[in-house]
Image 1 (cartoon, rainbow, N blue to C red):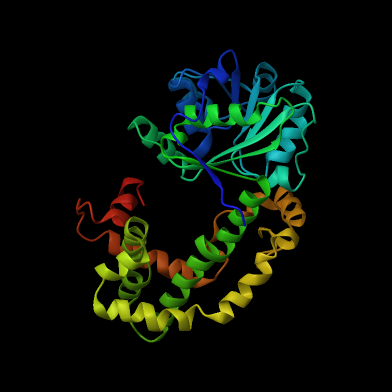
Image 2 (cartoon, rainbow, N blue to C red; image 1 turned 90 degrees about the vertical axis):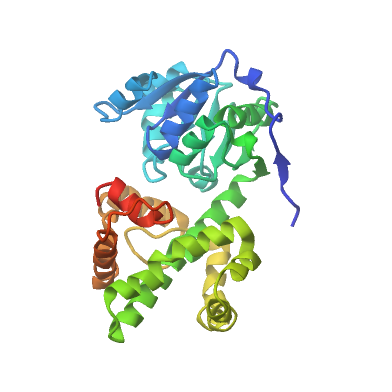
Length: 357
């Protein structure tokens, strides 16, 4: 497989955005970060929100213009759709598509709906992706600190012949080129993202935590100890891996922990796990998520349809895996209520207290 191309600071010419108006649709995690960073980079921005949105006042307080989605889209040259995947097709069909013009640019931060043709823009416009690889709060805080978050860029349609230049300009105004952006495709970003979410980042990690917690508790150990060993300390291991790599992490942990990595790890995550991953890895056929059905994976169009019908019921998932999630959460809260320490190493518990949990 060919390597991806890296663009760094200086790669984007912000003059490509001169005279253009960007409609940022949504004020969620990514929406607020895109809108604020672009605005602070001198780009003309309007935030498109549904009528009666509770986010409208926050956007106005931040100094941004706010308009209904349809009006924002009609007034813009670049429309950035940054609302949840599940509602994008409906909002695009009803409010955005009727207000697009030839020569406009449609931008997304995740390729799902475009790749799977839930959104099919006219051939007369550019369709691009700028996907920061961090939550919106970090995209914003890194920008404010003079740094940036790495990201992915991709071109789905290049009607103008200058889609790449505009994409790089947008990524630069967002702050992503400060850390570097990788050029990929809508297909690769979408399929690897879904695979990672299902097998490692969400599905794999949460199931591993839950299985470990249940195993210890079922063997008679206190839930608080099980929480510490199977969840609380996970953050510190991940931090070590991210900052120093797998080899560096192993050098920092105890000898017994390192031994467990070499011996216990392959027994838990072995060939059997890879065999389960492989069907999910046939991404051209089954790159998908599960929502209402709660199955391992379902075809992407089925997922999109199911979630459009039943998405409100897909939140608040403590019931999904039975009592164990509730027991784990209760143990976490008990541990984090002990000694209101401000020790910077106690990040998980400090984070809980900050949000009032």
